[in-house]
Length: 108
Image 1 (cartoon, rainbow, N blue to C red):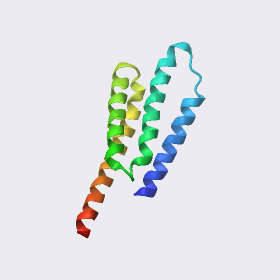
Image 2: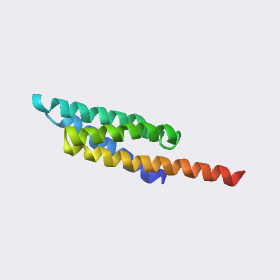
Image 3: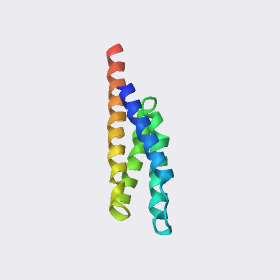
Image 4: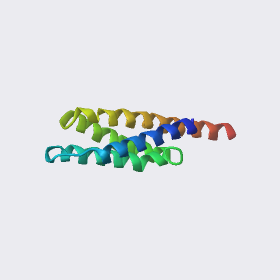
């Protein structure tokens, strides 16, 4: 699970940062681009901690989830993709938390 999730995470981050940095943005689209970079930055901060501190990662990704839903509803419908990605990684971090808890209970 760690290898598959790591590969998915790496491909997602590389693809998103390349897309964000390569788009030329006119004056009207600068706010949309700035909001997308903020959401991506929050996700980038949280994603490395999914396997080490899953509770904190789920909390930060929950914040990213809410921010991306608000952005998708009020600013740009294309930001719904950030919501889906946040949800996938929230579920992953909660699964890691449960797996750690079950492993701890089996050893006791």
